[in-house]
Image (tube, rainbow, N blue to C red):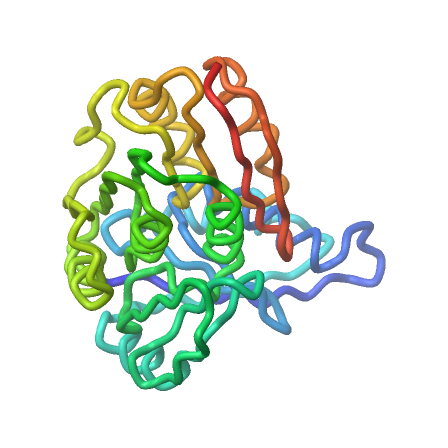
Length: 283
């Protein structure tokens, strides 16, 4: 699946009451409503990514913030093909370490003998651990006892979280992703890490069954989380835990209000460069 990259260059006027960082936050909020999934702050503005099938250029050019006279925003739209992502990821992929306990590395990196050593092929699938959301999800999972538990990695990407849950002793792990590239990449990484307990499925929330999971890991994006939250809740039982990430601090109220309305209570939260992870438990 190809992605659309939109590069925004932001120039604020001296008389403007808001700065470039605030403009970025507004842009991200508006783009999130248009199904954009990932954002990268740049020196001059913002790069935003959306699946090609979800891209609506007319709606993009109608963004409210683009008409604000206090700043000038220029944008460039281009298609990013999968093979381009692969070449860049394989060239630039570096190992990461989370909390001194978990390392995520490619096969060509040295094994540093940490508690949990995860080896992945650095391909297009999101979730190498480098992004703030995946890093936080790993950190939270490291502090959750999953021994003998049934775990779901929703939007599994590379399968990192499912693999870590397996290494930590979960009895049954399911990884689900709607993207075929992510599905195939997870299968490959599951094999390479000898995690035969993990079941990998291609699809979305429609694949979930009621009252099946003790722990759900959902690192997706705000719109999908809000849309599918009721299905996630139906797949949990009293005492089940769910970890949400894939959104900014400005989105917390939206996620929190929906979660509390469904009988969840917030256990803890974390933030890393304005990206947030929230941990809830079902009443």
